[in-house]
Structure formats: structure tokens, C-alpha cells
Length: 151
Image 1 (cartoon, rainbow, N blue to C red):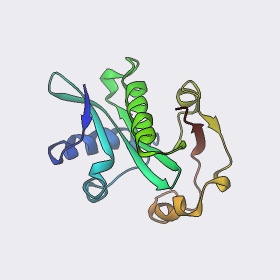
Image 2 (tube, rainbow, N blue to C red):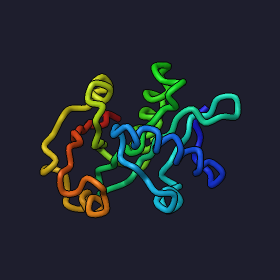
Image 3 (spheres, one colour):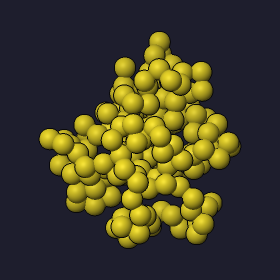
Image 4 (cartoon, rainbow, N blue to C red):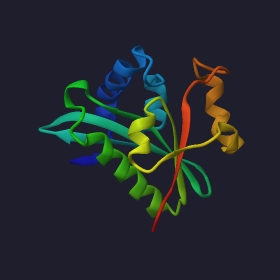
């Protein structure tokens, strides 16, 4: 089951994201950032345990970003990540967004879902506002990928 995240999920979300952030596979998110952006987050839940997390953040009038996509290590390769992306994309459609992008290290995963690599410089400047607080700024090595949504 995939559902909106609640405040009771934040610590588990944080632990899941930190696991991958510690390995350099995902950018870290502070507890403060997670609480501030809680309404963007969804979780995959199985047998009352969170197995995965993702978020959709609206960036501009026609553009959203899929962020913080992670599946618990013992639950990978079971389609949970794909389901989380699909729910984010469906929400983007409901909001009237035409495109979604991601900044990722998982190029193959997103390419398999129809995303294509783009030059980061083609994204609106508003996207880069949060980059100022990133541990990798200004030497970002994430890959920008985008998908045009079909309706």
C-alpha cells in the first residue's frame, strides 16, 4: 500500500534516506527538512512497516521534481521504487504538471521508466534554490533526468 506520509513516519523515512546518503547514493535530508516538506512525501507500507519512500515537489507551473526515492535495502528489486514513482507521476498529472524531473545517481532505473538525461542548466533557476544548502554545492555530480507526462 502506498499512502501519504505522516509525522509518525518521519524518523523511519530519515533512517531509510540516511542509509543511502551514508553510501553516497542519495543526498541527505535533515529531520527539520523532512518535517518542513512532509506533505510532499509518500511511503510504501507492507505489514505495518515502511518499505520505501519518495516525494513529489512542485517546482514551477508545469514542472515537478521526484525526490528522496529510497527503498529499504531488504525490499529492493520488488517493484516498490517503480510504484512510488508511478504514484508521484499520477499526482503530478492531477496537479496539472506536464513534466517531472529528478536529480539522481540511479540513471538506469529512471531511464527504464522513460526518463531522459538533460543538461541541468536547462532547469529553471528556482530549482537551484535548495542547492545552496546541499553538501555537494557547487560540485553537484547528480544526473538530471526528465520525463514528459502523458495524459
